[in-house]
Length: 385
Image 1 (tube, helix red, strand yellow):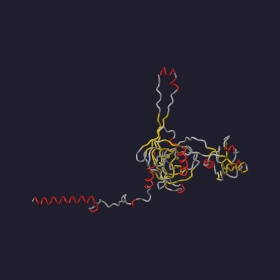
Image 2 (cartoon, one colour):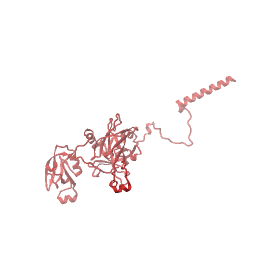
Image 3 (cartoon, helix red, strand yellow):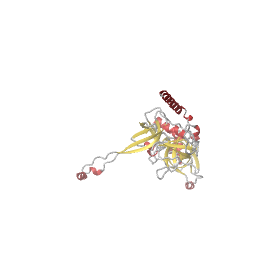
Image 4 (cartoon, one colour):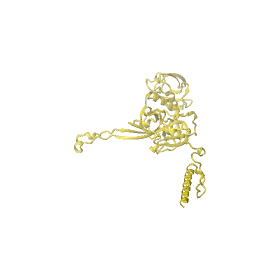
């Protein structure tokens, strides 16, 4: 009897061991649990066929590590009320302590553009900040300093003390067309890193009154407060723009967002990193758009060009003989369609070089050689998301 019990125990032990091995190494050999009803299930995530053709996971995975959160604080100094210094007031109410300084907090986003810590963001995100903290996608936080900024294009460059950082890949604007899918990545409302999807609604948007120099990508990807300075990327995860502003009557996204294109960003970024600022050409004129009414009033054949409404005394334009009432038609043979185009063409010129300006005065067209000056620094204060 004892021998039979020993054989039974050994058989059970071997069977349990075999079941363990099969369950661990070859579970498909075992009979599967049958569902109450027959269900059709999608393939597992490891199956390449499970990747839907409309998924942008690869683009998000490529760009997300390079997008950072930016937290700023600004100390607001409170003024002591004059009544506190009045002897009669102090006699009845006593001395009042000095007001404690208040701190204003802000948030935004940024994009790592180099592995050694350079971060691209909007100027209005870090404007007047006393302290800037940058939080990376991996959870690390660094104190950042402003290398330089350009208020007129609303761009700024920060740097943190870190290396081997994941940097964004710059895309090509020539490949971007209206209707292309784009992803907006940032930190809206401080909820954390968020990806939204939309299309390119328009290219070359200007005359919006947001920046001095405007050449925006318009998109309907949801952009909200906190997205400023974040990345607008294509379906490959390449950077095509920096999210900057929205059109909104409520403060939330209405499907009209604007981003600064990489074609404008590259030269500005390089100048800021190298010199801490951006140098642009300037001739010292104030221009006005030519409407149909103005064209008729001045006897102009069309509305092309920019009407010179004012000339700064002693400026390069004044020295070249340009007068109010002249119409600027071209700069170095590049046609001037309106004041915005004129501003861009002149800004692209280098100070101290000479340029040919074609103008119309009354019914006469003439050319003036203008020695380009350096555009004065202008600080812009405007509201954005």
